[in-house]
Each structure stands twice: as C-alpha cells, then as structure tokens.
Image (cartoon, protein in one colour):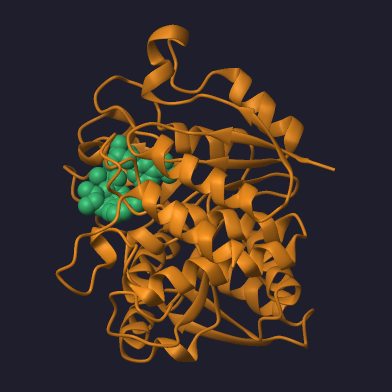
Length: 357
Ligand code: NAD
C-alpha cells in the first residue's frame, strides 16, 4: 500500500530541498503517492492568493503533508501561508527535535532534546492595539481603573493563555513522550511574574503531569532555562512551552545542534500533521543547488515515524548521520575543512548510496 501524502514544494529553496527529500524517502522502499499542492509566491499570480483552498483540502483529505518553506511576501497584505496553514488546520503543536549528530558544526555533544511549542495562543494570538487608537485608549482607561499606571502613549499586545490550550499542548507532550520512549518533561513558564497566563499554563501542566506517573516532570522559569540549556543541555529531554518561549527556545536548541541546515520540525493537530524544516525559503540561494536538504530529510524521518514506518525512519536517519559523520558530501554549512562543499542534489545521492549499502 502506498501512503498518500500532500507534497508542497513551497518557493525559494523549497523545491530543491523537497525534491532531495522525496528521492531519499522513496529510496527507503516505502511507497508514496504524492499529491502535489502548490503554495507560495509561484501561485500568487494564478490564484490571487499564496494559499489556494485546494492545498488545505488536500491536506485535510490525506492528513499528512510534507512541506517546503514558503516566503511571506512583505507589504502585500497577505498573511503568512505558514500561519494560515497552522490556524486553518488547527495544528496546535509545533514539534522540533534537536539532536547532535557526530560531525555537525557544534560545540556540544550528545544533545537530544525535543521542543514542543504551543502554536495557537499566547502573544501570537494577534490581539494588538496600536498606540494612539481609541481601542488602546479604552484599554488604558480600563487598566487605570484597576489601579495600574499605564502611559497614554503605549502600544498594547495581549498575552492570552487558556486552560484548554494549555491542557491540550501539555497532554500532547506527555503522549509524545510515551510514544517515543522519552523519560522527562520540562514545562517552561515565567509564572512567578505572569501569574494569570503563565501561572495557568504551569498549574495545568502540574495537573496533567499527575496523570502520567511513568514520566518525570519538572518546571523551569524561562530565563533560567536559557542559561541551563547553554551550560548543560544534556540534562533535558522533552520541553513543553507556551508559544513565545517555545519559539525562542526551539531556535536556541537548533543552534546547539548545528543550525538551521539540520533542524527538522512538524506542526501537528489531533488529526493532521505537516512536516517541515525550521528554516525558511532563503530566497538568495534559490535555484543554486547549494543549501542543505538535511533539515527537510530529517522532517521526512519524523513523517516516517508518524506513519509507523519505524524501520525506514531509522535507516534514513542513520544514512543522513553517516553522510554528516564522513563530512565529504555535505553542503557549505556542514563543512569542517577546505574541500569543496557538495550541492543539494549531491547530498541526496550520498544519502541514497548509504541507504542502498
Ligand atoms: P531563512 O531560514 O530562509 O534563511 C536564513 C539564512 O539561514 C539563509 O540566508 C541561509 O544563510 C541559512 N539557511 C536557511 N536554510 C538553510 C539550509 N537549508 N541550508 C543552509 N543554510 C540555510 O530565514 P529568513 O531569511 O528570515 O526568511 C526567508 C523567508 O522564509 C521569509 O519570507 C520568511 O517569512 C520565510 N520563512 C518561512 C518558513 C516556513 O515556510 N515554515 C519559516 C521561516 C521563514
């Protein structure tokens, strides 16, 4: 049986890294039927939108998608395709594994962390009031009536965290830990200062932790967490965080393990999962066969695991790791010596050779 998967090449470097990934996924021997769905700059003119409805329909039908990065056009009035996808499909969990493969350009060894970030609320809910508007003035008045001083020339962005949103992301993290044999969850907040938003998240996290006695639970304040991650990242396993802290910590963790070229990810909801790397469309490198396809390939590894193809996932991950360890057929960002860097398609061929061997 072939898995039916929506394939979104995206734009910029997207088509190149997606093609490299499609090739190595097929080389694992798992059968796929790809539903090609175009989004981003390349379809703007034809459809008048970077995200035609047909893309969402295809993902809803197949429930699994492999997606290349998509440019967010600046100043066109279009919302980010990525944000629209996550909202439209209620992909509330962003999952970013950060693992050091021997040979990656990093000061660290033996890091193996999964950051699980809430994707739909917090300061990213988009509830903002511009400085000087009647809405901001109304809010400022309300705040002053509560006895707090706010400058009249303030702009306001609201941090909104719900019990429902917190419960589902923390549950997701514990279920993930169980499914992938992880031992410990660290919940992140600034609950000592933000009592009603982060405080609620933490309270719910403690409660949910009680339902999973088989998994260790600990809490960290976000400022302390950044320091601990830099000093001793090996102590962490799965991190669960509200949107903003999750955004920052997942980039920090990607930095610990070698950067954007090897940072995979997924956006997941109750029914649907979209696998995509952390990096963007890097337009300046588009069409040059230059960038690293490994973040996209490792997102493909995550997709194989999600589909239950554990053997193929392990083999593909080992093949990517072997190419990194050899350090020959790797792109510019992974080079440890002065020999010439390989191109995107050469990396795919090197990984396929390892798979075949
Ligand atoms: P970016 O990740 O595209 O690129 C930043 C830099 O990182 C690049 O210039 C390059 O030096 C390096 N880089 C990125 N990917 C690499 C790879 N695979 N191999 C080697 N080096 C790599 O970030 P940006 O320049 O801030 O964003 C460009 C566009 O991408 C923007 O329009 C942004 O909105 C979009 N974006 C999309 C997604 C997504 O589709 N999920 C995510 C982030 C950014």
